Length: 240
Image 1 (cartoon, rainbow, N blue to C red):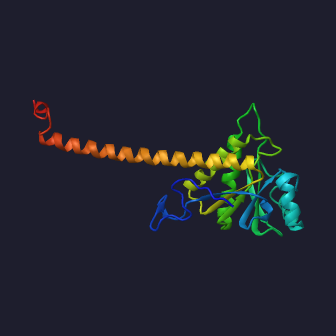
Image 2: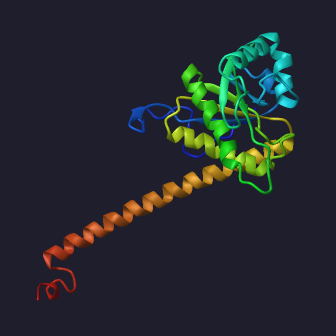
Image 3: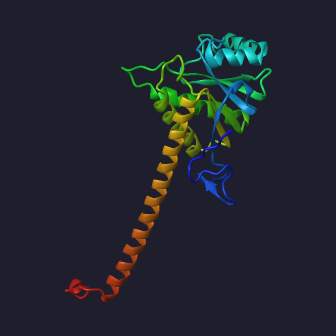
């Protein structure tokens, strides 16, 4: 398992660090090439269809490996709160059955469209899943590359949206400590590795700009102090 993380994002914030006014964690992003049903995590995210009753791909694999307990829980959800199924971009949790996890969080990704921007719905899948994880007290969450299979979402774009959504959840104060993207092949892995590197570069660039801005503000303050004493060139002229 190779771990990739964005710059400035350790698993745990330095002692005394504060995020949004509260001592806490920052989210570590880990990339894994492998089988999501084999992941030992607090929560495994299922790229479900709206029926919640199983399907192909990741959805079918999770139901097969997790056993009938997951399907029974999904059927109960359909009978109770989700009679019409789960809406795209939303998330809901069930037992993980026989999987090495506490919960399965089911989310319905959008089908990619060349004519309509559905990126907000895809980002919502990740944010909503992390919101549900927070409600359950789950700290490690394993995601597939939602919508990038039969739903046709381009991998590079899907990866950027996924990483950005995790950072948005982090900024909003999620208590999730680790997000693990479990990827099915080297192409998917490379796309997510590039997205994580892009995120790291953006963080580093932002930090550099903040540092330069602070330095510039300090110099401005020093110049102003000199001007007030009248010792700088033109200081006396300002008094005329």
